[in-house]
Image 1 (cartoon, rainbow, N blue to C red):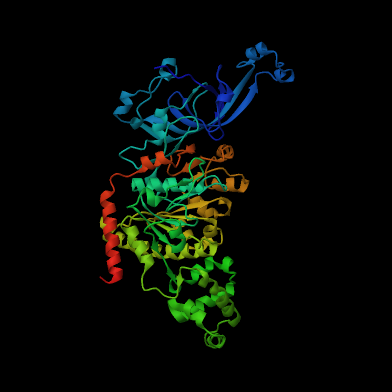
Image 2: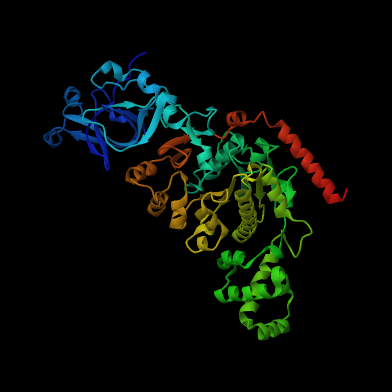
Length: 571
C-alpha cells in the first residue's frame, strides 16, 4: 500500500486562532477547498481538523512588485513552492488517541521522526478515543488528507450494532458516510435552517426517515405544506415527485388531516380526519395568535374573565351572547364591554377553519396520543388550512395537550421506576418556527417550554425555519444540533452560532456553501462540525431505508385500525 503524501507543514498558530500550514512542493492551492478534512500528525497525538481558509503568500515582497510575465513559465515554475507558496488555515477539532487499554500496547503511538510510519495504518476505529482539543501540534508537524478510517473513527458507521447511527451525507471531496448519532439527536431539541429553496424540507424528511428506520424516537410532524406524509414535488428535474414517510413506512406512519377533501384529491389513502373543538382552545392559545387575530391585551384579560365564568366552553358561550347579554355580564363580572365585543368579533374568524367544531363526541387528540404511545409516527396535514392562523392554532392546541399527557406519564414513571411506564421519546417537528419561538411568543407558548425543558419530559422539538435570527436567543442556545444550509443574511448566520465557541472560522465555511444539497452540521449529535454533501432522497435511498423487519408491527397496525372502526360503529 502506497504511503499517503503530506499536504502541508504546520508553521505557526495557536489554540484559540487555529493553525497555519505551508503547502508542500507539488501541492496546488487549487486542489484544496474550504471545508476539507485533514489529519495533523503531531509528536504524541493525531489531530482531526477542518480546512477553513486558503491564502497565497511569498517569501519576498519584491516578487509581487515585479511578478513574472505570463510567457515566463520557467520563472513561474522556479518560484512555485519556494518564492511563492500557499498557506492553509486549519482548525483542529478533535484529538485521536488510542484507548488506555490493551490497545495502547498493541498500537504504539506513531513516531513522527520516521517518515515510513506516517503512512502506516493507524489504530482501528474501535481502538481510538476522541478527546477535545486542549493543545496544538508542534512546529513542522505534517498535514495529511483525512482517510476513510479517520472518518470511521470520528463519525462512526451506519451499520454499527452498538449505536443508532444514520448517514446524513458525505464530505465534499470523499465518498465516505458522515453519520448522526440519533440517540444523541433525540436527547435535545434541534434545528434545520437555510434560506428558501435550499432543501430544508428534504433534509427534515431525510432525518425523520432515519429516526423511523432506526427506531430512535416517535415523531409528531405538523406538515404545513403537505410535504412529509405523502408524495411531494421533487426538486430533482429527473423526478416529478418524491415519496412521503407513509409510503416508505406504511405500517409505522399514520396521516391525520385537517382538510379531508384536499388529502383525498392528492390520492392519500387511509388518512384519518382530525377536528378540534372550541372547548379545547384556551386563552394561552389565543395569546399566541394575538398578532394574527389583532387581539389587544385588554381582550386577552377579558378572555380570562370569560373562561373563569364559563369554564372550558367559554368560546362557544361568548359567540352566542347577544349585545344585551354582554352588557349584563360586564356589569356583574367587571368586564369591559368594548374589549369583549372586539374579542367576539375577531373570534368569528375561527368559524372559517374547516376543522373547528362547537363540540366533539370523539377525542381525536387522545387518539393521536394513543398512536404515539404504541410507536406509530403521526403526520398532521393541513391541506388548504395551511395559513398561519390555522397552523399556529392547531399545532399549539395539540402540542399543549400531548405535552400535558407526557408530563403525567413521566411523573408516573419517576414514581414507579417501572420500565413499562417510561414514555416513548417524542420528537415534534414544526415549520415556520419563528412564529412559535420569537422572543415574545417563546415565553408563553408550549413550544418555548419544550425547548427550555430539553429532554426532561421525553419531548423534544425539530424546528425548521429560514430566519434563525427571528428565534429567541435562549431557545437557540438550547438547540443541541443545528443543520444549516446556505444563509446570506449576516444576522441569520450569527444566530446559527449562538452559544457556539470559536465560531468565526465556521462562519466562513457556512458562507461558502452551495445553494443545493450542502449543509453545515454541528452540535450534540456529531463529534465535531462538518460540512456535508447531503444524501439524495431518491430511489436508491428508498431501497436503503426500507425496514424488512416491520411486517409484524404492520399487521398489528391493521388490527388496531379494524378494532377502532368497530368501536366507532358500536360493534
